[in-house]
Image 1 (spheres, helix red, strand yellow):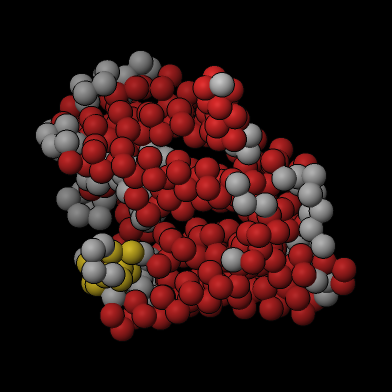
Image 2: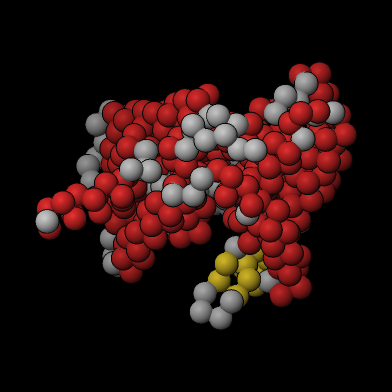
Amino acid sequence: MLQQFLYRVWRRLVERVDGPLLMIASLIMAAGLATVYSATYDTNDRLVAQTLNMAVGLCVMWTVAQLPPQKLMRFAVPLYVLGVLLLILVFFFGIKVNGARRWLSIGFTRIQPSELLKIAVPLTLAWYFHKHEAGLKVRHYVVACLLLLVPFALIAKQPDLGTAILVGAAGFYVLFFAGLPWKVIVGLFAVAAGAAPFVWTMLHDYQRKRILTLIDPTSDPLGAGYHIIQATIAIGSGGTFGKGWLAGTQTHLEFIPERHTDFIFAVFAEERGLIGNAILLLLYLLLIVRGLMIATNASTLFARLMAGSITLSLFTYVFVNIGMVSGILPVVGVPLPFMSYGGTALVTLSIGIGILMSIQTHRMLVVK
């Protein structure tokens, strides 16, 4: 009897969890936890906190995976409205850190409302296109663009260019999978290129400096170029096989800035080398391929748009973070998925994986 009961409990726990997604995400989390420990070896506080963050993330992932896509749609508009309202509140009551006002205090902790929009924006846009699937017209794409531009502008104004890019990318991917014509896409890129000089004047001084030092980091080796120089030294010094866990000199001599958050890839690369990097990139590739397979097999437009957007958003996270650390993209605040230290971003990513699991396990359901 006990054996049958335990079997039923176990089956209930795993029946709506996608095995490949869970396995890949767990392997990356394990690598991330080991790297966070190495980056913060002088104190166990962050290791304990990150372990708790991952436990919460896995619980959130499992919970979201149990919800069918039609229930997820019901959260779309409320989450979007709540997220935009919180972004507005940030301007009046937000906590200012390092010149940026991005956080709200809720007594026992702080929250970053912009993280909510990483899920709320694609969720709302997918719901909107699903609602008008029978007769999509130009005006629907215009409305969708406006729904995307509002949170994008509010987040960029904080300023938080990294999160704004991720939110904008997540929304754009929904537009793309919804059938946004190529002529419009090319036109948007042309307009963006033409507006570049105007956008340049609107950037903050530190943002312009980051772009300029990307071209020549040695022009300001102790200032804006310091992050890129130290990160590339760490990556290069790892060689083929790496220096070994807890043996990274750039890491433990504290040359790498933000080594447990945005620049954790430099720590990993120094210790694991080229082979370790290749394995990590392979895991991310498998995660993305699995997500695209789920998007292809999705049974509704909403599910297809959400799966496609979440998957390509993961790609954007990885590409921007590793590109930033490697010195081929400007330095922006983008974490490496399931590797970087931090609770808010980890929970957001876990929600995304949970939605992919929900779409996969409920793919035979037809939403009316």
